[in-house]
Length: 258
Image 1 (tube, helix red, strand yellow):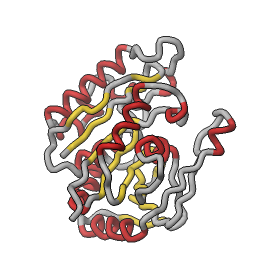
Image 2 (cartoon, helix red, strand yellow; image 1 turned 30 degrees about the horizontal axis):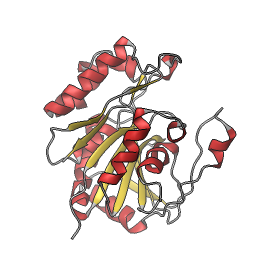
Image 3 (tube, one colour; image 1 turned 60 degrees about the horizontal axis):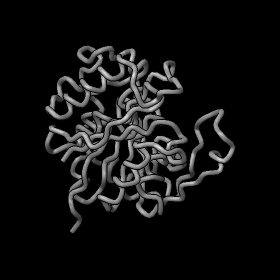
């Protein structure tokens, strides 16, 4: 019998994360050693669709969906297998919850998925199904997606939201990269407090109640994996399992829900 797998949200940062020293890299490497799920559903900020879609490929390709990075990065592969049966079951659960969902048999894994997974499970030995976000939809609709998929955790499937706790790329800086700008630090503090308190209402209404929400998330796609992970929780009170900043503006906070 499979142990109940956790529901996680991680901030994946730059595509260079696996190859440059940082606290976030070290943490993700250690995180994978704590859990051995039978499968993973990864909700990536970098697959944007109008309606929910699931990767149904048996051998998903490694997508290099970024520009102006060192040439070696485009040669990286994460040769994991997919799980068409898990994709089909997840699609069925979504339909049963009244959520429109489709399976894309050709889609691979973008860097929102393979960057953290390369660190967590470098052997690429756990099947992965990627799930899209819908930026034109609401955080509440993403919470409902997580709630529909929650029972998969009982079968040992890890729900992994991969986005960014803050994500304003226009304010990236170099130099003192680990000291956050004030508005990002304020949002990150609000986010961590809301997760610890299990304040679902606030987390779903972040645009109206969080400090400078629009400045920290000019577009919603990097926030939306979080309400999916929250929806998959049995206990809305989460744990902060990592804190650090990258480029002075990107919070690398990560959370776990039981």
